Image (cartoon, rainbow, N blue to C red; front, side, top):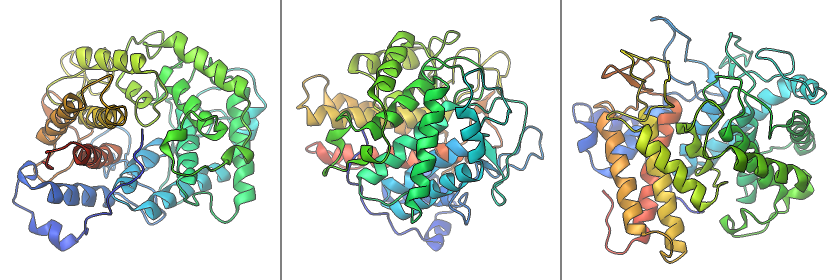
Length: 415
């Protein structure tokens, strides 16, 4: 559901950003909100194109967040596409390729196994890396996360189809790496294999992980599923052959598991990824996912990740993630654009835009006065991961995606 055209970025000026000090972010005009939010995101960007998850150095306890999470980097750089800075996005994805190349032996070792891959074995790409050395950062929680590969395959294929050389100059070597990743995924039977998922908990079989890998393989299989997204045809399937039987197995597994996230979770915030960016579920499945999340997980300051979440739990109440408001805003603006393309046959685009606006207002209401998106609220207070890189990115995407939907709506003005 990615749009094909995004406005060029507003001039990002440090001097302009500083002049906004003392003004409450949510009271600024749209142009200034975008400028300030994007500036905060870019403050987390490193010289090699990666984004640290936050500036938190671990001095108050818990894990350090001033490191690279592979998933966070890939989602954090999404904002660059939505302000027209494709070069910066491509640089980030080339960094992911460098990391995969550095630890390629783990991918090839994993492709030789058919049994369960443990948390920190030599057959698993780790989730976290040092932002300078790109060395693995080990810990006791689970590193086997299939959605990382799904997101990587999906977005690299998408960028190539849009005419961008994300692979780089060493194309042959990178294509071999991509084939190793596909072999790894198909060998470990990703469509029925337990992993630790986006929240790094498990192991369980997660619909979000299945959907991510299914989207990535579908993008490279190029069977027409995503065809309407692109203005020109790019036969990337000739470089990375993906047998159709793997797609069929993944689709069957996803349909069996939905609407649940896993056997232990009837619904989960991360299932929004199945609607955006992947658009890998049917209209009916998307509606059920949205209904489950909005009915059961939406709170005053954010969206609960899943029922009973213990991370930063306070007084028996789960932490509330502003990221969820931004994600819901994106989903509704994308659904509005889809409805407009279909002539409003299934849903009212006006109502969908209003829902997107509502959630954008809600995320702005819980952002800091200077325009940063916290990781979460617990007991009414934000924690120290401020801003959280991919949450900050999703706010930029939400604002730009909603602006695009408004452009298509007669009589509407940016807000």
